[in-house]
Image 1 (spheres, rainbow, N blue to C red):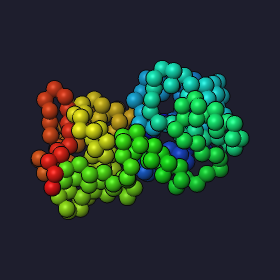
Image 2 (spheres, rainbow, N blue to C red):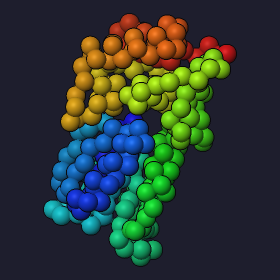
Image 3 (cartoon, rainbow, N blue to C red):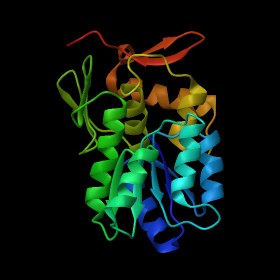
Length: 221
């Protein structure tokens, strides 16, 4: 999953990036409103954490511009202010959740994961697709009833496919969500990743739909 952090305080931005990275997200960071507006307008994110007190363009304006441009990824607002009228303004502008500073990092991660689940129409941190079971909270996997040891990249790959409602995902889209803008992948890297995961799960676990991309097998246990 790919996340955008919009935070102008360098220490807070670094803490957020490290926490989300540790939770299995690919993370981009914007430190002012104009950069946030641009990145959210052209990149395909699964979730954004948006501070309201930003230089150059305030967070509420950024959110309104995203929604006006039909950028509908879920957004968690952060603010040092706890005024209920500001919370209402954020929700009415299109925010999906709101967290006041200071906050516990564990709560933020839980809220971000919940937003991603809801956006995919899922209520639980456990995802089952055919013989594959992913626990997105523990970042663990089982296939056909046996535990599978996965690297963080391999888990992110399966997690992203599992959230795509059985549609085939192209190598280009996978590279964007697995590597992000700072470390772009290519089709060869995705093909190598698919080979590694198939070796662990079995060839039948990931199907290739020629001309469209990859999809998890959903044939039941």
